[in-house]
Length: 327
Image (cartoon, rainbow, N blue to C red):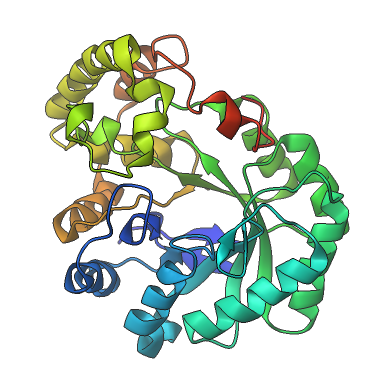
């Protein structure tokens, strides 16, 4: 029996499902029936934590989750996010009024009366974090959301927000090839009792072996614009992946499972949320919860893939400017 982990007051399977790729970011969304197989199959495979957002497909993803899983709402913990959209437009906006309207729209699309965990997707620095979190606190008081989360914020911002209202979870990118949370955020989460949720835990598919040729990426795939997937950096990272894949072979698991198992062994409180459009990969990811890694293997992974061995920053300069992290 695999032990559950805490996300705020909720007990969840240690690997959740990131739903974003079912609607946008990695090229065209999959056919509707395929997306349904991923979502329904995830429940059957043991997933109990589903992560979506208002901005994913500008409402498409929330509607998809609501339509497909609405009749099984009691079977999972639901997380969504606000602050990166306004109506049907992508817009960084953390004003209390916009956040509250976005929540109402999300509740309607998700076909639910309450969202278990509601994140501020990005901090709009024009608005004090205390004001944005204060608006979410009002939503807690009104019974529309149960807990508050933050995404892509620094340790100091987390502390300011937590002083306004308890923060249940903080999510940001974390995997063997993106180690920025180790600078300060993970320690702050432990100190405050905030669950750390790792998104892109398999390196946006790269450390799963899913991007061996960038020219094969679909039109609209946003990885094309990421520095690690470009030119000489990509070539160097492919060589790095070949060494990582050998470790997975030695362990007897897939590279994606090695990433997820590494996260589970790094900290007993971390929850990861890999995304996929493939029912087979969804089931593969869930099985990572049973992979055991020795201290020697952990050390081997960390010596192979780390901030010094990965080539290129995780975001281009314009995108990096929109996040409040210790990158």
